[in-house]
Image 1 (cartoon, rainbow, N blue to C red):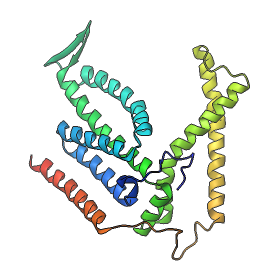
Image 2 (tube, rainbow, N blue to C red):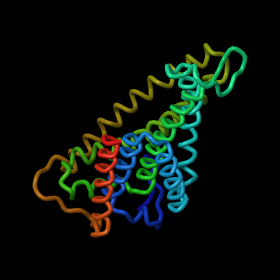
Image 3 (cartoon, rainbow, N blue to C red):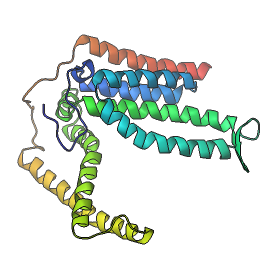
Length: 259
């Protein structure tokens, strides 16, 4: 299965690549739910470490950690500033002071929990996107009774960000080749953003229309039983794993209620 330019999927032979995509989706959703249900930061920390280990096992650490750092580092700084300074629970235990600004322990603890929760969410779904081939995802969802249109929308949502990123990069290079200065003062940079957004929006709409026409020409809306070029296996062990993941979420809910 070849890697496409419109996806962050990375081919491989790891156990995560061999999983039924439905199992990957269920695990990603259940792990995300558990860390938001349980308020103990240690649960999110352990799951983050486990997911980081799985990233290396799947050998997709290059793409995942690059994307994770792009999102997580600015988000962490933002959380520390907002929660550490503006959290209503502050004013009890100062943690760090720089001039007139004080970061409070209560806000830092809240920021730590939020950051670890988001880390689990990001890592789990990046693992899904990089180890589950898009076509296998659609086939697996369809075989589980998910409507074909909904399955396609889910797969397309995993591909849209890489597509827009690649298209924006191409448009920016084309604009620079025509003499647009994107590295000058703030005014010039603002103009470059406007010059980028207009063709990006138009090209995205054109691409969406072209894809819709291509899908209709291939009988996307046709009814009846569908057949696929290959099968996506769903062994009993994976069904047990999905069942246990659902039970773990229910257990976390009850633990939160009685705690």
